[in-house]
Length: 563
Image (tube, rainbow, N blue to C red; front, side, top):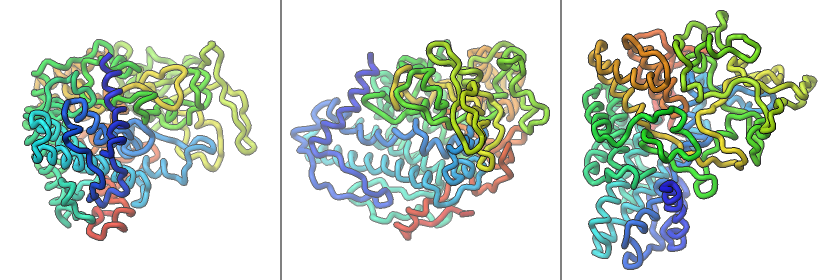
């Protein structure tokens, strides 16, 4: 299978290490390094495989996307679709998860430093490899037909990293050189808005300048920057242009979304959940993924993050899960059809007139295929026996209570009671297939860009310019039809935003979506609005603070407004 080939490609990093090509990144504020040992061009950079194996290090910084740290902490836990409640004695962590979800985070939270270091680490690795490739080209020892497209791939990947930094932090230093990189780089401007506009312009230019050199072989560049990934990055950039620069760019977004649609390369999978199987490399709609592998490329541990300790017996995992991340009650309720999806004792989950989440628009008609995003109800061992929730907490002992995942979140922080109640609360993230018998790593490829998002983004861009657009309505209904639910008769801001949540749950789009829709009237929650357990938050929290560690190490950096 092609997936095996690709994942072996990434393991060739060991070859590059043996040749002295790769270096540890000591700190990411200082993006300048000295090359102490360089492979002789006459010995390397002679064929595609050698270039690809060298580039593996630039892609390695994407490896955190499937874990419980950044960027998921920022892009998921700060939103109304995902929650990490305190569970008995677990997941308190000094109030960290509560602060994220309630938008009361502190400037010195480690997640921001991890995000910054991780993606500036990717920038640094790309800069180093660009320097090495271009040096080989200048010396005339490498084939220019190979150097040029691989340098463009690295520049586009660097632009992708900067796109995420732009989205998360706004005004960040632009460093596009390895040998001339300043030890303490400055932001483009001391003015946040102007600096963010300049970072936007840099990302846009890098992608446009290198687009024509990227491969259009989607299968041959699986898991790498190709022309379609660049199109989608540009489309995302333009969809959020009003947030980043103050000027909307809807038609520009449509141009690059059409480039993907009209290529005919991608299509909706017949079954929603097939995009997230253990072997999901054959999906017709996954555009950009991180190709994880339980042996060769670690970092994806969703089963550990979300499942209950007792779920080890359901899937015969080698390690006990951590019982953490869950969908919010509101998100789950927006997908279920209460009539066709009752609870195990006949009660209708999610229909609670006293809840401040009640009244959310729910999917109607046939059962929504996107219920596969969630795990709810009684849990059983692989042998068909009920799993029990055992444990002793203070004077509250419920050893042997049957385990059942219920979507209701009874409390966010139960430090006072140390109860077992929230050990079972929350619909668990079932989006990706769990492979029985695995250890701490999963082999599913984590989806970053997907074709259904292309269709929903184009629909939104059309709707923004004409709310009565028939084409926009048809595009959204294509996605709904695949999910097995009734089509909409018209589009509203709330329907577009809610449909994106149902379709793209746990694909790290929700924070960006909530911020983008903030200026559009509607009853659905936006990023700064109150939601269950969260009060109104300031608009300054639409970006993360520049990490305190980076400010202390680099006096040229200016903290973002509000922090």
